[in-house]
Image (tube, rainbow, N blue to C red; front, side):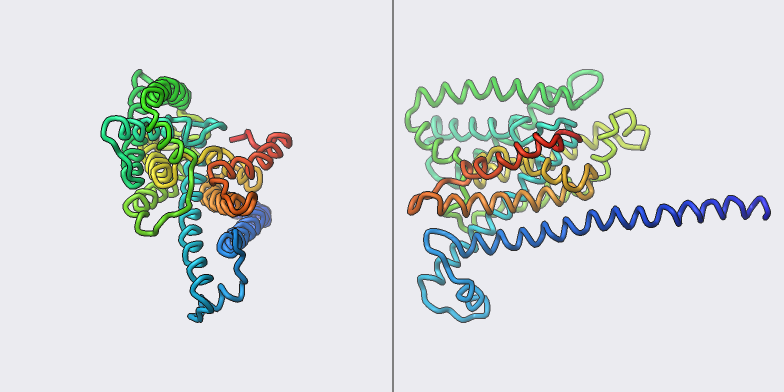
Length: 355
């Protein structure tokens, strides 16, 4: 055998050995994703059919076919479809933002609250109530989105000061400091203004009930842009996991890419918080659950976290409708009740902390 054919033969042998492994990895990824999509479809159907008044699946499918049995059940389904769409969008945005935040900051406790997003939104809402007499839910959303964006900008700017720029550790520390500082001002305004306390309580609990599809604009567009930024940057986040020096050696402009991804996370968190209020824990738990199932490849983890975030929010919202009828438990509360057992299981099995 010639010296030229030996390397070629060795290369073919290596490829033949690696092909089954690659196929096995793809199967391990594809099957859970298919099951996850099926779970999302089931959660959406569950959300539409179940509530204080349960609707028959036959009625729902007949309605889809254009046959309306009666106005009451038809109106119920119409309202629940809108509510389900809201839950899908908000849950996916928070799950995706949480996964992106954990990757960019390399912090396993990353969620929309770590960078001061929720605190900035709450402060802006309280300031709007106190100084501008804001009472409209639409204006709450506007103030919340502006406050979330300003908070993220302040945290990133302060973390960028210094030679190393906005490192993951500095981002986490600045976010914690900002949350503590601005949170104290929010508490002071609330103590001085009882109306602000009452209005903020209704917004801050987090809810997707009583919404209209028209209210998704323009925040829904911001969510779409933020999602595109994060999904397109999945390979970059994978490189960030190797450390800034290694990412730079792989050709990444670390500071510029981190800033761009930060913008995407801010758009997702800010818009979702503006639309539904600060829904805690979802952005923390969904990425960890998917990481334990699918691994830490962000090309798979980001969309999976988005889908699972939507699943958890839909299930939590539906459970909140039926747990104490005829009253409803807001989704900001029921999400924690549904998600905590899952997260405790992940922690106990030591699958939730590896990035």
